[in-house]
Image 1 (cartoon, helix red, strand yellow):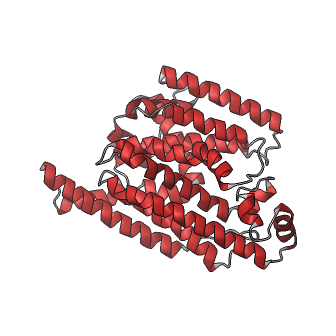
Image 2 (cartoon, rainbow, N blue to C red):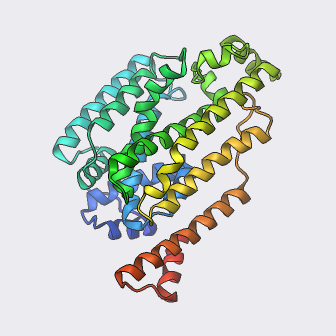
Image 3 (tube, rainbow, N blue to C red):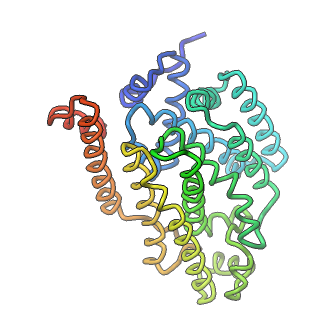
Length: 341
C-alpha cells in the first residue's frame, strides 16, 4: 500500500506545532484542513488567527461537520433520500467506532477521533449533531422558533460546545458554555438568512413559519418570489425580523468572548465580526436573499482579518511577557509571517 499523501507546508507547520507525527494521521488532518479551506472561507480565515497548535483540531471538527452536511445536501450527485440516509447511518457507525477506538480507517473520522481524545470532547455533542443531520432528510420546515432551536442545538450549538475545549477558557467551562452554544446558533441563523433562496431550492425553509406568517409570508410566497425574481414588501419585513432575531442571539453570545483564552479570543472575535458583516451585507442589499447571495466585501474582510492579526500578536506578546518566553520584535515578526502563510 502506498504511503498516504503528506500535507503541504502550511498544514505541516500546524501539525508540527500540534505534535502530530504519525504520517497517516497528518494526512487525515490535512484532508480536514482542505475541506475547511474550500467550503468555509469565513471560518477558515478566522481559524488562521488561532495558535498553530490548535488549528488542526478546529479543522477536524469543521471537516467532519462539512462532510456530514454534504451527504445531506447531495443533490448534484443525484442521491435519493434513502441513499443519503444510508450514507449518514454508515458515517455515524464509523464515528461511534472511531470515538471508542480513538482512530478510524476513514481519514476525516480519524482526525475527529484524535481531536476528541486530545481535548476530552463530550461524545454526546457528536451524536446530537448526527441526529440533526438525519432530521434534515425528512424535516422541511419548522412551525416555531422553539422547533427550529431543537434542530439547531444539534446542528450549531454543539459545534460551539465542541470548540470550547480547543479554545480554552479563563473561567470554568460551564460558565462559558451557554455563550459558546449561542454563538454557534447565531452563525447558523446568519447562514439561514443568507441562504434562504438556496435552501428553498433544496425543499427546505429554515425560517420559523410563525415568524413568516406574522408578516403575511408563507412557503408559496417565497417560492413565487424565487421563481419570478420579483420582490414583495411582506417578505422584506419578514427577513428583517429574522435578522433582528439573529442579532439578539449574537448579543447572548457576546459575553462569552472575554471568557476565552486570550490567545484564542482574536479568532472567535474575527468570526463574530465577519458573520455579523453578513447580516450587514444582507441589509445593505435590501434583503434580496431570495434572488442573490449577499457577500461581505473583500476589503471589509481584509480589514477585519488585519485587526484580528493585530490582536493575536498583542495577546501573544502579553502571554510571553507573563511566562518569560521570547517576545521581542523578531519573535513577533516570525509570528506575523506564519499567519500570512
